[in-house]
Length: 371
Ligand code: 13P
Ligand code: SF4
Image (cartoon, rainbow, N blue to C red):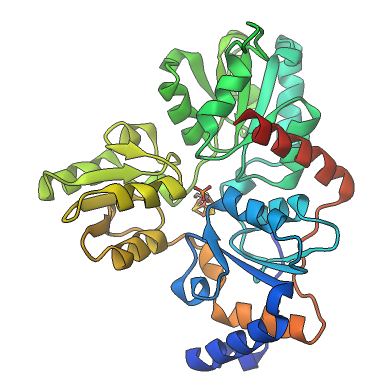
């Protein structure tokens, strides 16, 4: 999705890193408790050093919602995270994204128009009252609102199994909410969770939005327990079984931990799988002297290695690239945003319109009461 971020003034692009650090420090001090800087685990160190809280996508939004005194929430992460923070914070709080082009390529793989068309096709072959739409946190507010309007729920990488269990398995009184889930935008998180719950390959089908009727026949559309949107994360999809094999050949006693956005063939070879927060806990719990091969974004892997002097933490893919959109947020953008706030100018505010926010919040709240 094209979001237009204008070029930064030269003052910021030509400044020495020490100068940027001074400007950020001064602005932070001037704004005091009016300011809350949130840093996602994939951010650069030059940004993370200024964050008041580090966390995963959902955890940070929760912190934003709890810190009611913070007038300005500067979200060092990507667009969908800033939108979620805007939905969960009060009207008196303003959420800012330091670079408007910091999107998420996976979130952009499912747009609300395409999902609405899919819903219509499903309505022609099955009873959509029995289909529960589930969207991963990594999606636009418009998609979360779609899900809220249709009785569905949001999930994150740490609670996907609990959410799908709520959607598909009988509750305490023996009633099931639905017979099928339409899961978007990440096919891998959906598939990995489906396998964890005991579903078989034939129970899951991939809906390809580029093909007529998703590329699926009516019987498959009617009978698949999980319809998985054909989306992926370009960072995590790169980790392959060959990377795991090469790591194990070099470190026979090593531990492999991957994010569930990796392909299933890779996940099934790992020792542990979980969200960014889970990966941090897994490294902390590993015995001293461990060598841990991690399948996630490189900034988090490097930080874990730096912060664990008694362990060796490496990326499973020696050639892994950073998440290019997370990488857009740097000290220069942060300094530009903060100096604007000190001067009374709110740059790059992210707002979700009230109707979209209302329904997206229904889907987010459903997640909170489900897990
Ligand atoms: P987390 O929810 O685990 O932070 O993941 C966000 C993300 O973008 C993973 O690629
Ligand atoms: Fe999106 Fe992948 Fe980047 Fe996460 S790592 S923000 S899913 S592109």
